[in-house]
Amino acid sequence: MKIYDVSAPLCERMPVYPGDPEFHREELPAGDAVISKLSFGTHTGTHIDAPSHYIDGASGIDDVPLAQLICRVEVTEYPDFSGDVPAVFFKHAEAFSLPLAESLCRAGITVVGCDTDSVGDTDVHLTLLKNNTVIIENLCLESVPCGVYQMIALPLKIADADAAPARVVLLDTLIE
Image 1: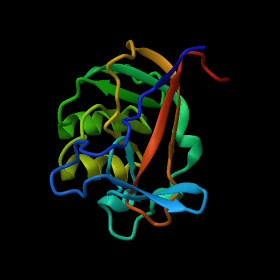
Image 2: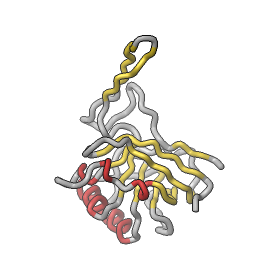
Image 3: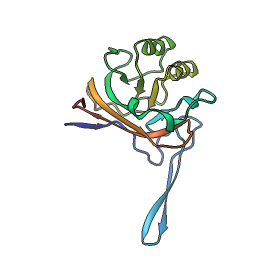
C-alpha cells in the first residue's frame, strides 16, 4: 500500500493567505525536556474550513463529521471531475467559479480540496458550506497521480473554530 501525505508542513516563513497570522514555533525549556509554543492562524497550511468560517452561528470545525473526512476521493486536474466518489481534490486548481461550485453540490460531492490557498470567493465558499460540502485548502498534490484513493483528513479538534490545520493522507488501497 502506498501512502501519500498531501499535507503542507507547518514551518517558519511558509506562505500564508494575505493578512493571516504567520506561523511561529518557539522552543521552551521544560525541565529535562523541550516543549514548543506555537502561534498561527486556523487557515495555516493544509486546513479544513468549518461552516462557521462564512456562516454566522454555523457549526465549528469540531462538529464536522469525521465519517465525511474518511472516504474515497478522486484526484483530478482542475476543473474536471467524474462525480463517481464523494470527494474530489483538484490539481493545478484556480479559484472555483460559482457554476463549478454549484455543479459539485448537484453531483453530491461532500468534500472538495485544492492545491491553492482558497477554493474561491465568498459566493463559492457559501455555496459549498451551505450544501454541507467540506472544503480542504492548501493540499500538496504534485506527486499524486490522478486517480481514486482512500482519503483520511483529520483536522485539529479546536472547539467552535472556523477552521483547523489538518493532516491529510491518501492511500492507494481502498478501505471497504
